[in-house]
Image (tube, rainbow, N blue to C red; front, side, top):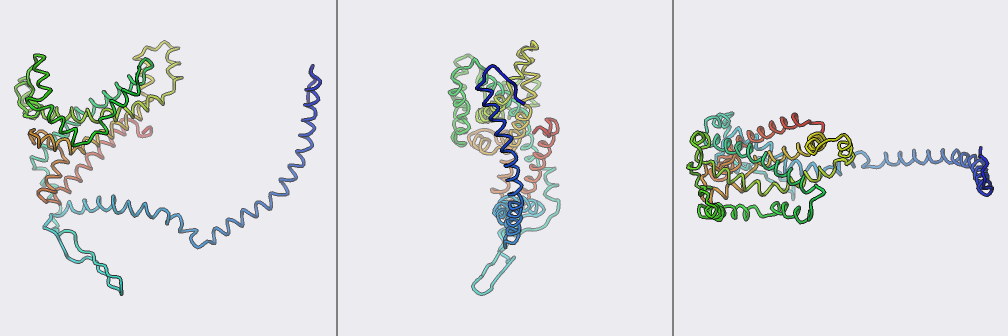
Amino acid sequence: MSTSSSNPVRDKLTAVREWAGQAVAPIWRAFIDAVRPARQAQIRATRSVGARLPFSVSAPYLFLAPFFVLFSSFLAFPILYTLYLSFHTYQGIGNATLFWINVGPIQFELTRIAQLEYVGLQNYQRLLGDALFQNALANTTFILLVQVPLMIVLGLALALALNASWMRFKGLFRTTIALPVAANLVAYATVFLLLLQDNGLVNTVFQMLGLPTVPWLSGGTELIPGPLKSVLGTGFWPRISLVGAVTWRWTGYNMIILLAGLQSVPQQLYEAAEIDGASRWEKFRYVTLPQLRPVLLFVVVTSTIGTFRLFSEPLIISEGGASLSATRTLVVYIYNIAFQQFQLGYASAMTVVLVGIVAVLSIVQLRIGGESDA
């Protein structure tokens, strides 16, 4: 019921609107009741026609078929064949016929890719006593423990700086820091190789500052403190050089991801923390880090996987003068065994072990970081 006001014109308009609504509502309900059976019959008829179409059942599978074909050809088959190869030794190229069709104009012959000999678990037993494999695993572990935390801390610090309100020229800094990601792998590794020579630019700057020359590639132990010489060994400086090169390249990539995570944190949380009197450190600890945890977990997992895939940088740096025993990673060793010595079975066994290590580390990181938030 309308209420009277001081404006008679508004009262009349309100009364007309209420009358129109009361008059139209029954007509609209009657129209809906009249149309609904016909519409429902039309929907049932459409469904029944669709069910009678010849490809109504198989159509979804036909649309998904290209994905399954590509997945089976380029991912599932290589994985399964690598597992199969790990229980065999490679005896040479095989040409025995595995499958043959000769029906009229259709002729197809599938021959064996390689001649293999089944050896069971011998390839895996060989890993336990392989000093070079243990050396490659130790180098990769050293790079993982030093490079991944360093790269993530640097990436987070840069992301916080670029997300601050006081920062100017954010676009310029963001582009400059992220630019190494687009650099050519071989080009940037070669540049680092030239910079880190004994008489390169880095040691020249050190000499100008009165600092001792560092054997970045030769790997001497003269600058390592006495108690640590036996632990770090002669390959310490080449490993540090490799860590520096990889960190320079991928810090910008992690910075972009972390910056996107920071910009998605609700500002109301910071405002509430300021009302509660929280300091900058307390806002970072109790607001930023919890909100950024899924992004940090993603960065840690991808950085760990990327470290175990290191290939171009250690290969170029080792061929440029660094000791191979100091820069040999697991992927480099697998490459040498598979494509230089053609021991495909043994290389496949190492690949399976490498995949197992990465899977275990990823599961542990997801458990620690919170799988539900990842």
